[in-house]
Figure 1 (cartoon, rainbow, N blue to C red):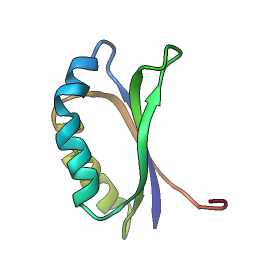
Figure 2 (figure 1 turned 90 degrees about the vertical axis):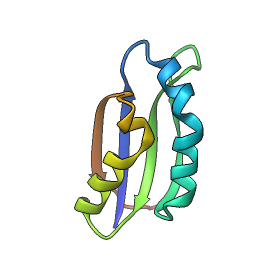
Figure 3 (figure 1 turned 180 degrees about the horizontal axis):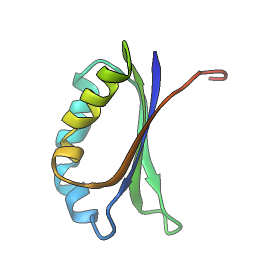
Figure 4 (figure 1 turned 90 degrees about the horizontal axis):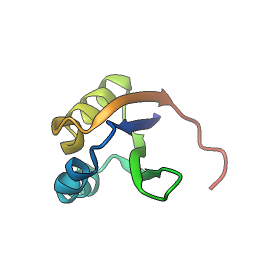
Length: 90
């Protein structure tokens, strides 16, 4: 199943994001369940969150993946939502 993970960074957490970015990107590439991913941007074009589309067996696997993300482990996110998603275009 496809799951959209939307995460919003805690205010003022740019340093946390940048310190953990290499491990986060490696995790995206190595886990084998990420269809697409990229940062959300604020009005100034600065990274302020993440949008990740996962291809997983179920919501339990999606939640476990999200909890193991180096960004989550570093306490970067203010909020994370996981929603079943249907690809229509692209």
